[in-house]
Each structure stands twice: as structure tokens, then as C-alpha cells.
Image (cartoon, rainbow, N blue to C red):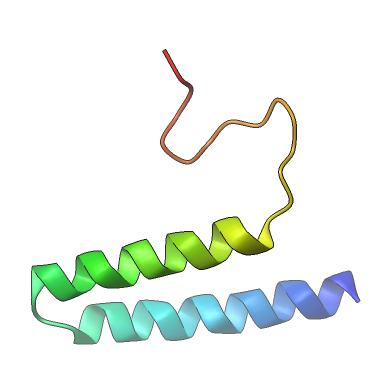
Amino acid sequence: MEDENIALNSVLGLELNRVFFAVRHTANKQKIIEFAREVLQSERPEQPGSVSPEGPAS
């Protein structure tokens, strides 16, 4: 099951990348980034001690 999730995430990542570069306006690219970040955060279980994509808190 984990291999299937990895494969699906890879395909979805490639499609998101394709859409991202097809979009010409920076504002729309920012919306795509925000949407993808929300989806990833909602599906990823919270792991204690992990570092967020923004980097460690200071």
C-alpha cells in the first residue's frame, strides 16, 4: 500500500508541476502553491519534532 501511495504522489506531483508551469500569472501560481501546501498538510500526520517546510522556528 505504501508503494502505491508513493507512486500516486509522484504522478500527482508531476501533474501539479505541469499545471504550475502552464500558468502564466504569478498570482495564480501562488494560489496553486497555497492549495498544494494545504492538501499536503491535511494529509500528513503531525510528527513530533519534525521541521516544517518553512524551516525551524526561531
